[in-house]
Image (cartoon, rainbow, N blue to C red; front, side, top):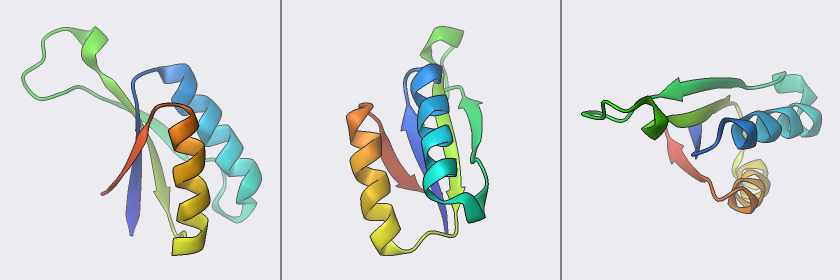
Length: 77
């Protein structure tokens, strides 16, 4: 299942993606994409997503801890 890790800051998303690439090399470095909130005209309100696939529940627990350190959150995609 696809997991979306959501961040306000691009730098946070990129750091998490790099860390996850190191922790789970079999997945490669996850993609970082920008998502503009529906109805928002101001590009500053865009969120940054790290797209993850192929992790089990145990690995997702580690991911949640990491994401929390950057004030982000995880959503099922």
